[in-house]
Image 1 (cartoon, rainbow, N blue to C red):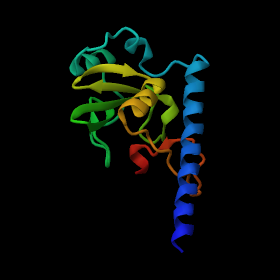
Image 2 (cartoon, rainbow, N blue to C red; image 1 turned 180 degrees about the horizontal axis):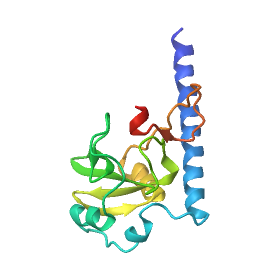
Image 3 (spheres, helix red, strand yellow; image 1 turned 135 degrees about the vertical axis):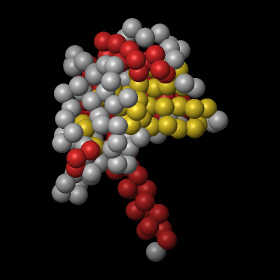
Image 4 (cartoon, helix red, strand yellow; image 1 turned 120 degrees about the vertical axis):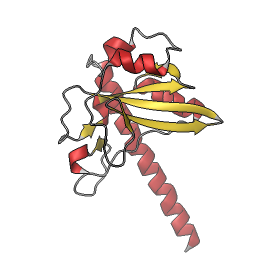
Length: 162
């Protein structure tokens, strides 16, 4: 009994890490193939330490409505807030400007922007993975597909489908 369930949990963890790994390979490959990450033209110019309000101002309003069930949205962007070792971290998800509310949000077509203690820290998938490894910031979990499988594509249902 107990040994099997522990082994099953361990196997599930390995499968989940494998799906996340495949997802990050896809996201990083998309960035490496010259596909501009949303917001990259602005983010490349921002110096580290730029205050949060100035970062959002530079990006301009995002495409998301202010009220999305289950999400914290500010200035048109989905924002995730974390407290890690007593320090404030935020991930602002810069969405493809072509996003429409009935669409699903493909994580590979969003750019994570990391804010530390209210100021710009870094941006992009490599920065998020580095912050995960070094600081313990959570990584996004790929969502289950409509058929219940989890293939690591990482789509997040859009506001109209939630």
